[in-house]
Length: 281
Length: 281
Image (cartoon, rainbow over all chains, first blue to last red; front, side):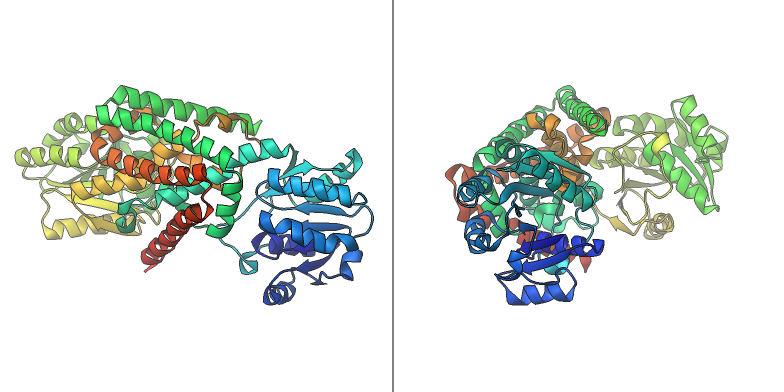
């Protein structure tokens, strides 16, 4: 298959490396930075540059950029794509980007639009940190725009062939609600956690729980601010729910209420066990 | 060396396995449950039972129990220990347990008391989950009670010989303040996080950040409630600081303030980088 990738950062670069490792694909890449394109070619993530010429050859175009950059870059390349080429974005929010693609689907009815969000990442960014194993065992979330059932099935199989463990098809609304909790809230909590004054002086006092909790404090502020603000309704609702739960622990501590605290901890423990068991089924 | 271990759960059992793996030690163990003692012997964590007879032989006694159980169990075994035997506890809080040991040091001046807290653990409990690698690369925190500088040095070397990467000597007060943040607050946050309503239905939406953040939601409610209530002043202070920081993100989301949110995220990111760099030195 011939694949075009726009945006050769951590995700786009990892996608290119994954495709090239499989050997069966030709990958053309485009990035706003010439040096990133050069690096991507040097590390074997792409075979060549995606331009007006090579765009005509590709079967699939995947855009791995900030949501705000999606529309203009698609308007630039879509006119050159062949009929039935599949267009997917990798943005971390889906209501906004699927709306963009819905509009474009009216104009480019010959193309197949499917929104996407790979549930994978690292606390680093850039082509330098991209790896060919990023998607192994991860989930891929798809939001259909105008694909028929056979086209959607083939997009699903394409992602499974890349090493994703599962492909989940859902609505943009549900995706954004779920992702506010499973990803965005984790980043907010981790990022806030490290701000406690004592964090800078706890040498020798940290075990695995602290390391795990603060891992994603490190993030790309520009990108995450954009993703979070576009999903502010969902994220703030999850954040307020968490704050309200945390306040219950605080109250128990303030009152020295050991039984109450034990009950709160037990509820969380039991819920974690139940959820893990359900997910293993 | 001959070592006695009281409490053969995850920590005590792992200590026994670690000592036995080294081959050079004899380990006697005691647990309130006979079947746990039997299991500990069967899995090779102890050589035999710690009782009035074997207690006379040991060079070191390590108590790995809840803080509230420390005093009575020490009163039971201390009369049999030989002069200059070292007594250490593994409790997760130190003000309370060091106070207990300070009192006992008046009564048993022939013994050497040093409080301890291994910065290691798992989200499981019990002898069945104990492993001989639990302390590898971990920190051991010691709080001196009545040891002289040579005795303290030899206790420090003992723990380094078990595979601990470092031994930190500090005060009970500072330990409890630091641990409130690096361990207890992590457990509260993880335990509260899993309670968000949507947590039970996010199949296919979770990546590494969610898995890391909820790992220690699973805990022993009885033990942690005791540790947390005994350290409620420190823990609640850290928790309130976190809640206050989280509220800043919520406000930025509520106002749709992208620049403000970006600034908050950048501060957390920069702080995480700075702290990681300092810790690597």
